[in-house]
Image (cartoon, rainbow, N blue to C red; front, side, top):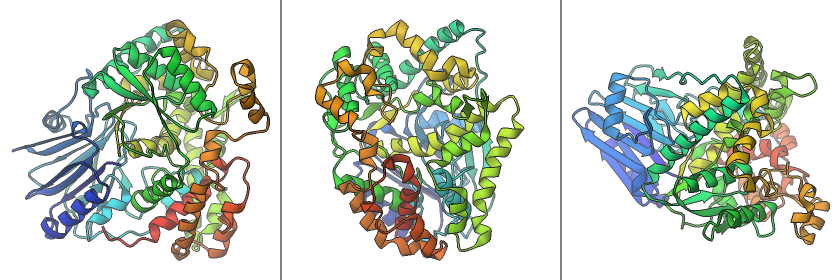
Amino acid sequence: MSLVFLAQTSPDLPGDCQKRAERALRHEALPVQWVHPSDTGFLAVGAPQADVLQTGVSEEGTAMILGYALDEEGHALTPQALMARWGQEPSFQPDGFFLAAVMRPDGSLSVAVDPLGLYPAFYTALPDGRWIVASAAGDLAIHPSFRKAPDPEGISGLLLLNNPLDDRTVLRNVRQIPIRTVVTLSKGKPAVFHTAPLPEPDHPESFEQALELFSSHWSRVIRQHSSLAGTLDCDVLLSGGRDSRMAAFSVKKAGFSLRPVTFGLRGEYEVIAARAVNRQMRLRKGLLFRDDDPRLCLKAWQTRALRSGGHGGGSFGALIPQAGLRPWLQHGILLDDLLGGYATRFSWDPDSQKHDGKLFFDKLNRWGLPEETVSGLFRDQEEGAWAGQLKLRMLRDFAERTGEEGTASFDWKFRTRCRHHLGASLWEFSRYTWPTVPACDQKLFSFFRSLPLEWVNNRALQTAWMHRNCPELLRIPFEDNTHRFAGELFSRRWPAWRKRLFANEQPLRYHRVFSMQSPGWRAVSREAEAAREALFAFLEPDKLESVWPKDVADRPYPNPFAALAGVRSLMVLAGYFSQEDAG
């Protein structure tokens, strides 16, 4: 995980705060470190390698870009160029996956992240009116004046939907940097928000025209985002699903030499499919990272609990067991929601053939606890009322967008589950390698946001593109890496012993990874149980016990992936609030 800590100058910064920041960087063993104290502010950054961190200091201020940022033409932005651009156009939003900041001579601090808000960045005001920003909520404690306090609204969102809503966090007065927004912070003044509108979308008149426009957009996006690596030798995340194979094919076609990276155990469908894609594309021998080490599961939980404060909920991304990855990783995350139609159809009711806001909420709520359960957990009844208010807020937005329910579904999905659950894994990857993310392109995003459901539903547009460009990859079984795989459709392609395991309801990778009966989650359960009492300050102990039983690791759950997401969120909260703010 990369680390960013930004603060406006106060008397303690040159001494104690700088030591705390440097200690945090050393603790993460981040090889690239930049600590820059000045008369106006203090910036500390840790990154996996030098290529992903750019800095610039001039009379106009101090600027940094962690990751990669692109202008409208797809050209790489330097910190100096971004500083000048924000001076002329305060709402300018680059494409790419990044955190960018500018500290000006007057002490004001401007911060923005990628247009989908996937890179986490949190900000809060100190008692003296100065502001601090960090890439993890727990890292705000680097400043000795920071004190954490629970936010019932943010906690209700986390427990209800697996993520807080409206850029809130589980901490009172701590907010997350909004999407497509440059936030400017000045001492003693409210935060100023400059939000960029999405580019005007294309308006294709037919499916065939949409396919041509998508082909043009996709070629451009792959070329622009991949070129930032500065080398033709790259790693690519290959799960075997349609999105990862499409991304790998496109990047290879653009001239890159790829090494596949896959997570799982030998014999699992994901690994078998990924190797089939590898053979078909004639890629070099890939890396297979096992994800069953209990130490890794415990480390992931500690990272989420002790540093993130629940960002991303209790569902962890891929666990990276070792270094060895190249500096840049081609990543197809969120393509299923973007061009596979998942985001638009999340509210679609096939029976009524209409979009339904309540159906959307119910699907999202599968990753949390029931509304009445969340409400009843809080000691204070007024605090418990937040769960119902959050639900009404979402339903009201759907009701007010008559005729645009598909767009509402698209927007809400990307603002909630895509951003906080799926996107949160990118921060974890950034500990060893920096992801290049085609989904973080605003023209591509705007294009798919405007398409009717029938053109993207069931991956229609994506399938048409693959039939045209790489039909052989479509013939490899396995659609995606979740529980929706139907192995019997391709029974002739799988070894007999795999078919027997499937017939016996052998758990898929996600069920195995999230099973509370696995060695990893048993270790997490012990650690979290020791921290349970930290939640008693605002949650009812008896009701907490009914939701999160002490013997949870001994109980069988047919599908722990979603069913136990609320329990995992409670474990994260317990770990976070049990820690002292030691910086």
